[in-house]
Length: 123
Image (cartoon, rainbow, N blue to C red):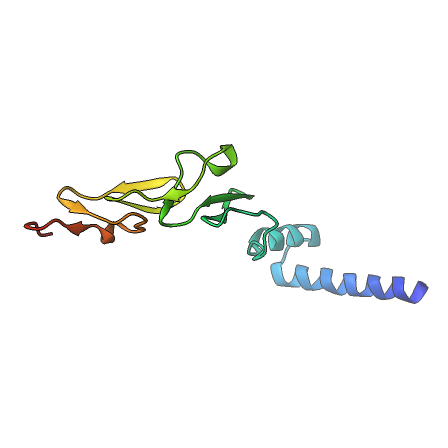
């Protein structure tokens, strides 16, 4: 018991000194700085539909439509990801871009570059 406690204190003390040395800040500020700069975890506890992906709204994890899909409202408010309609491009989330005049795209397009000129028209 006692050796374990002292060993734990020694490790904590070394970590604290390393954080202060690395950041030049008091250890509580160094810890906060490291937590803020740490990348988000790669594994999420949030389960999204197959047509959606986990993204961040600020620091909160939310499901948003994958590229090629669109929802009229946020998924956490009852929205459903549906394939991007023809003649549009959906880069993900709630964004839908219309193809330029005299061009068309297939359903599920991701980029406006997928809009192709109609016969007889050029870019």
